[in-house]
Image (cartoon, rainbow over all chains, first blue to last red; front, side, top):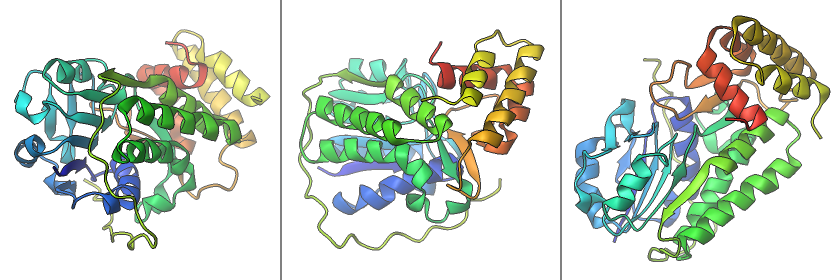
Length: 223
Length: 87
């Protein structure tokens, strides 16, 4: 079963969030089906039923998760349950844990990992062409990567959440900048796991060194 | 341990989102920024969020946060939730 990665990449927050997954998650899973302009409803609808895990980075609100240029990907009551049935779903997005997450579980998703408030972090806008090199953003986004790697190691959704939360706590303890520390604690407090906490997906091979070279990114459009 | 400047920012964010409180929070953020912020860590530090249809921008350079705090009650409330952990 392939991994469905839906990585929006059209503005600074999506570039930063998707950049870390491109660098650290993509090399260990099957080719990315949905990146940048492909993060749209129709490609997602076709890919999602074949996967055992859905990982998304994009903007969101209580009722929906959005892809490229805020195209709706998953919206409350507007998707086929086949797209989510039996899957572990992780959405790096704002507030999807409030209404969309519970709806996904009601429609058969095995587990949902997301956030019940805004997901916020501080990043360096000058590093938009190599977002994975951003140490400020890394303090918040590497715990997400670690949590996803835990899932892809074949461990449970609860273990993945714990890994992410421990990452925030560890980074907050050594963070000197109080705003960045506050963001880490805010994200940690808003992370939720819904559904079956013992859910797991097929373990993927771990990355063997050397990690493949990073992708080449184009500048973010100003539109 | 939190600095005095950040503690002052938190105190100002705890007030209801009135124009006076928003102006006070903006000034507290400027003082915090001068004292503490992003010490040589990035050339253009920017606060970003993955919210949809918000009244504040998805990406706000840190030096523009005071201006947004002054004019936008929704952003004031977001900063309150982040800094004080109060809903």
